[in-house]
Amino acid sequence: CRVHDLYIASPNTTAPGFSHSQGAMYLSYGWHGPERGMDLPTRAAKIAEIWRQLCWLEAELEASDRRRAMVSRLHLDKFTRDPDAAGGPHLLGQLTLADLTWFPTCVFMEFMLPRFFGWPQLFDPAAADPAPTPFPRLAAWYSAMRAEPAVEAVRAEIWAYWEEMEAAGQFKPIVDEIAASADPTLKLTYGVPQA
Image 1 (tube, one colour):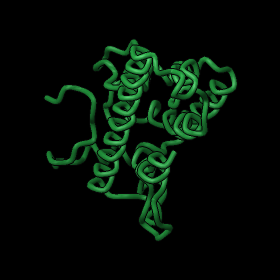
Image 2: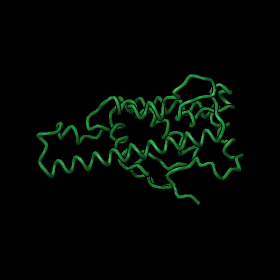
Image 3: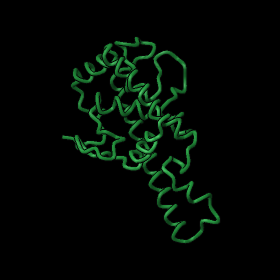
Image 4: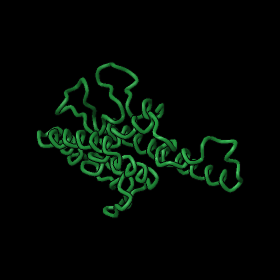
């Protein structure tokens, strides 16, 4: 939860003009004004931070899988937490606050990053276009979370909200800002081959 809260969801200040990294996906001067919006270089930096944190989380899940495999091979299960719980589909094996913290933010990412920033479908294990998910463990976790009816209901509610906001024009200032940019140093698309 700490990585999510510090690097994704918290602006670490309430001063005007500051926002959290996840805000780079949906906050703009055109829709939210100068108090909450951001310029394109700031947006690109925050989008890069989202990529870094997703890479970190994927690497942690991979390392956890390797540790569990090693423990099983060495038959050290009696010295560790319950191996069945540790091998479960959730971020820490069993359902924890980490899953419930990350999941709603990942719904935001699932909706916005492919649609407005050209990312692949991050949380679809079968995604192929424009590229497969760079995060197969996160995709498997997300699919397992969605299999829970209550969690899927939360996703549906969040998704419907963002569909309404898209129809209302909330993302148009961001899309227009990206389209108007001629700065080749600003990177907003991750996880797909770059031309």
